[in-house]
Amino acid sequence: MTEWLTKDQSKAIAAALESLCKRGVAVEEKHKALGVFPIRRYPEADGAVERELRERLRAVVLDGAEPDTRTRASSR
Image (tube, rainbow, N blue to C red; front, side):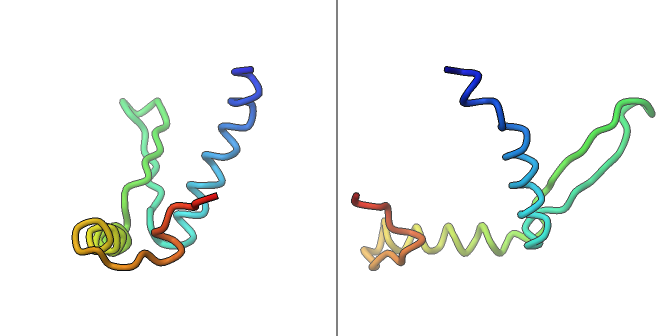
C-alpha cells in the first residue's frame, strides 16, 4: 500500500512548487554545495500571503469571526 501512496509523490511536490513560484509565493534558488552537489531551495518570496492567512485564522479562532469558504473546514 505504501507504494501506491508514494508513487506520484515527486510529481505532486514538483507541481506544488511550480504553482507556488508562478503565484509569487516562493522563489526557486539554485546553487551548488562544495561546487559539486546541486541544491534547490524555495524560500518564501513575500510574507504577505502567510500574514493574511494567519490573520484570517486568528480572527476566526480568537475573535469568533465567521469563516470564509477557504478558512472553514468541510462538515461533510
